Length: 150
Image (cartoon, rainbow, N blue to C red):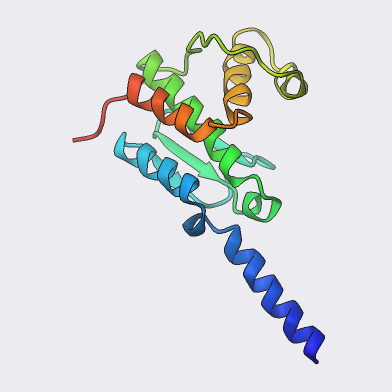
């Protein structure tokens, strides 16, 4: 019985640690995105098996709730936020920012499956999401390329 109670308490603590309300960087980035008119939905994206999704037409970012359990919520939001910044830069479509950051070898596996221009867009998103200062970096991209909603 004691072990069961300890397991329940530990499980509850672990779940609370992964929620967006306790991750200051996640919340800070979500707030920044919302200030630029993007909607962040913490629900299953409309594309099957996606962890995150950016839809330019509606300026909506979906974050699959499973990413909190997997411990990848912040990089997932950063990735989609890069696409939001790319959208602001492109005005009406997602466009590569032409960043001077070299993609780390570990990220190549993820974006090399894309072709041509989409590869460059994804390379930027994967590259930013693995940077130690990824949240600050993507917020600076939003500040540079997006206009705050009125």
